[in-house]
Amino acid sequence: MIKFVHIKKILVTGGAGYIGSHACVELLNSGYKVIVIDNLSNSNEESIKRVQKITKKKIQFVKADLLDKEALLYVFEKNNIDAVIHFAGLKAVGESEEKPLLYYQNNVIGTINLCQAMIQHNVKNIVFSSSATVYGSCENLPINENSKTAPKNTYGRTKLIIENFLEDIKKSDHDWGIQILRYFNPVGAHDSGLIGEDPKGVPNNLMPYVAQVALGSLEIIPVYGNDYSTKDGTGVRDYIHVVDLAKGHIKALENIAKNSGYSVLNLGTGRGYSVIEIIDTFKKVSGVDIPYKVTERRKGDVAASYANVTLAQKELDWIAEKSLEKMCEDTWNWQKNNPNGYV
Ligand code: NAD
Ligand code: UD1
Image 1 (cartoon, rainbow, N blue to C red):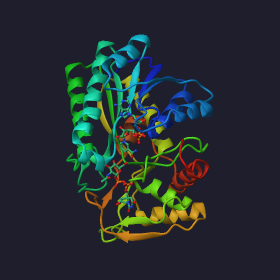
Image 2 (image 1 turned 45 degrees about the vertical axis):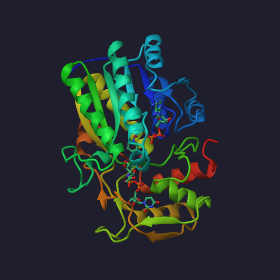
Image 3 (image 1 turned 90 degrees about the vertical axis):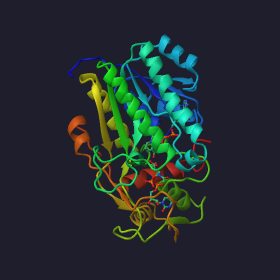
């Protein structure tokens, strides 16, 4: 349905986190007013200060938990919020298997609280961070939005449950504009080197692991299997630069301002790179030797996953532009300048 809403002030949940902080930069640079809610459970307020430094613009920051209904309502009451970009959530697959209820409570109940506060204050525009993990087994490549969803882990199931109830909300009230974005593998950092990914403890994901081995804070990369049926036997993924991803959110907001509706879009580059290609490219751009050893496959991993991105290109007029070299270069720049992250 066509509509014309003027979207000015955005509530960014989880805006102190990795993707949220990069989205805040793009929002501020595009002229939006930004208010962030984050409980800092997996982030540091320093990221907000750095975003302000990059953009020379102010962010309103509220340290609050989405499980705290009163705090949420207060934020909506005191601000004229036009739309929400909802990043806040827990995202560690292994932890989600160990502590399923924590994940259902934080991700699912947190989002229900958010939507209830939105309804109470008549805010009906939301962009939601979903994940390619909802597809599960990735049988047919590239993966399009109609591919079967069958998440293999609790984290992925929380994402799919949220997608489903957002669709139900839309069916109950057609004024809602809901944009579900299924991210593939976000990597890289802002090219200022001021903000980037700051995982707590030993990273689970490949790119931050490679960066920490390059830096010397970790010894050697475990390559989880080289007997997959892929180009070199190692896992293949669709890595997307976090700044390209952040820009996709601006396009999603513009889309919501023009059209109410519910839509699901893949955000990736449409290209798959293997673990070895990532290590080799990082080695080339950093000029540092990066040792690795092949180990057992990681439980739950698929051989290959990459997106069909034609729908996002068409609906959002958006395309990921940054190369793998740039992703590695910016990760390295961030890691070198911030060897201990934001601490
Ligand atoms: P992140 O952990 O860096 O950011 C999430 C932020 O949400 C953190 O700052 C955390 O403190 C905050 N948060 C968590 N629970 C909260 C709560 N109950 N109340 C308030 N704040 C809360 O993660 P990210 O990589 O920036 O991911 C952002 C979103 O994108 C998440 O929903 C994640 O599931 C999704 N996603 C991430 C990836 C990825 O690889 N990074 C891939 C696909 C989807
Ligand atoms: C992981 C999550 C997924 C999440 C995604 C993006 C799992 C099972 N899946 O996916 O839910 O949406 O991150 O954040 O955790 N690899 C190594 N050595 C390492 C780390 C990774 O060889 O030390 C390999 C993996 O086997 C994989 C590739 O590198 O082939 C990418 O791994 P990773 O960065 O963890 O992303 P995903 O597996 O896609």
